[in-house]
Amino acid sequence: MKIYPLSDSPHSKELKRLGADPMTNRRWQLRAVCTGEFRAPKKGEWFLSGAVPEAYKAKTGKIAIKFYIARLVRVEVRTVEEIKIVQE
Image (cartoon, rainbow, N blue to C red; front, top):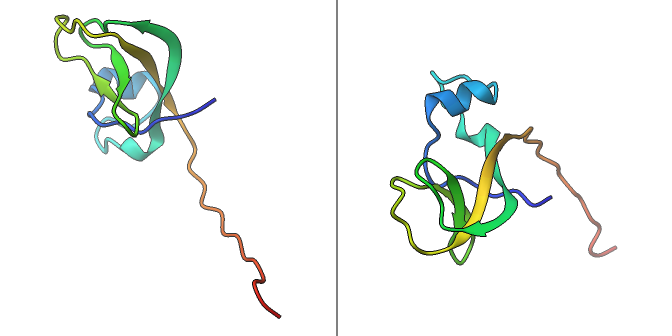
């Protein structure tokens, strides 16, 4: 499943629902995934847009263009270091 970064800030209710602390608003813990729906987003829904796709939140219900609809997910971020011998 592909995950996408958030371009807009989630609402405190969304943060609470996902178990994130609304006081710190740790966006790095939240990402978006595509639901597979392709339609005009409704007010408050997340959708994917951009040449390098990011998740945006629909500010109004007046968007006539169709986008892939997204939903927020909480992720665990791990940094992995890879070391490779390039010459001996």
